[in-house]
Length: 560
Image (spheres, rainbow, N blue to C red):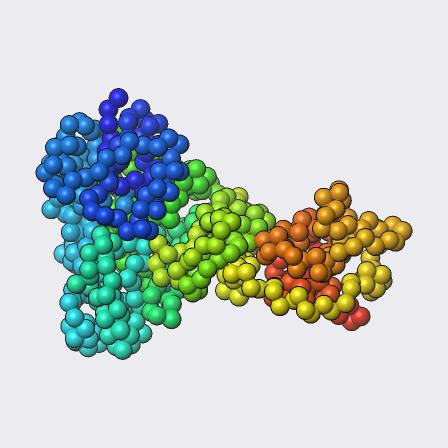
């Protein structure tokens, strides 16, 4: 069986391992030399564990020539890269072994943010003005000479928003450069040079393309949103698939092909980030490898009908297959999105109720978040590597994906303890009992009729009503016209996940067009109280009902 060498099979590029096997090749992963950071080592191991079968792994020598000899003995068919740091190394190996690949002379334009924009300038297409600097004074002078009130500061080589700063004024430029020069780059080396660029404002897009013998095709388009942190960083919020082309999108794709030509790209895939403003598209940066966020092949296949690491194989191994795909129209089959969880501060998390929340979403595909039962320490999110996790969404109905994405964003922004809980959100309730739930009053005030479920701390007797407690809720079959959630002190012994689970489990007992009622005597025991109760109903897709005179102190939702 012939070998395919994959340099650093991490992030979404881990799919290359199974792609090679499916085509009858033996994948061998080459880890780059040097001691990896703790985060990088963790991501490597996570990627290996996601593979159907753990690949053969070899380690590069500090001496490149020794590595070249070792890889030559493996007689690989091709050498591929799956991560940003592997692009230059894999390109060099391929050329030195006489294999298909991109010329090593193009490595700067493929990897360095200043060089790629110089290539665009030379090709006569739109680029972003910038300057490589080594100290603050150079950055300030460049901005003043070009009349930039706002600017972007970032490393020359980076990925996943690492070390990226958006600056609204020259003071922020000064702070960004000073801060960045204290960081290490993606290879663990101290940053001694950075690039300061003109800041472009518009809508941001990911355009993923594939190239074979210099011919290019579109793989996928995603629209993404980043948010600025108080420190000036720029971190991922979410990304969503673009399934139907809108105004400016054809120009965006054509421009992406021009970018591939400008950097001399011949084989493989480009994960490009672009801005679209009133002047048209402009490149932010190219990343000559599959996109990140640890997306599994089945997720991408379910949205776009293909995944780019498989198309990457075509560009090297099957030019005929690539040519066939080249003529196929862009036609995603489902709406997809991913929500990256932004951790607002350094925190020790005791409980991950995000798992309970996410499992209620109609478009949930996969949860990629820790579910550890032991406390987990999280760093404040400042780039892709420090995100708290990712929620993947897929559905035939775009509106359902958008609704689920929006509720996740709302909870993250306003009710974060419902996602990651430090164990403090409901402790204060212990000495604040506010009186028992009066089910009789709820039934009368809310005009309950038909099949009624009363869920409380203790059994309640009334003809025509089924009553349950947290211990007996599973005995209720479901299909109720009205569900009254009256739990109180029973919630105090539960962590946040257990509390949410019992609330959702009870809501599930209502039938379509049925009504769920949460009185104040219960929502006062929930994190975020009345607003928290409304959020939980929205997570379940219930329609919140407007208050009616005589029904104060209730949160009422209808299941559609």
